Image (cartoon, rainbow, N blue to C red):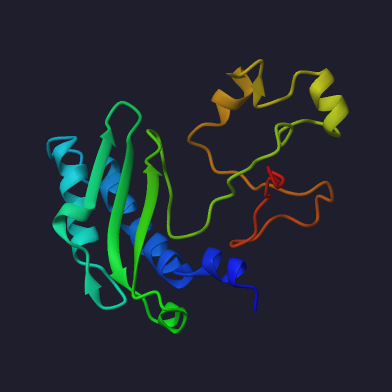
Length: 187
């Protein structure tokens, strides 16, 4: 084993566990922008994030109050939770490392106009879904949902109406649990 490599990997399990737990704290804070609209903000978001962070532990050790820092960006409905904590190691003890400083950051944001139901919603709808022809003909006829960064009159006419999204083969409509996805690349 290359000792230089092992130094880079020590505490890896701690970091992974801390990231997962911290995501829950950030989500709890951001969730108040949607689920608790009557309580005062940003204090409610901060309180919820801190409470979840304090109710979690890393390798059985509670997170100390002074180790948690919550920053609420009220204008953008965003909650950032940072935890910096010294924790006892488990596997790294074999390498002589008794404790390790763990620093993790999680950010969650609540969309201003989010909606949902018990059934999964597609998070990408093709711009030419309501077009009368294929994508090229629909674009040429301006039968699109968004044009120039603005919602079109066609899209506005569909708000509040139920419709079925289908693939190019009209006999194969999407079923609950299926969705169109966007490949964001490795960027």
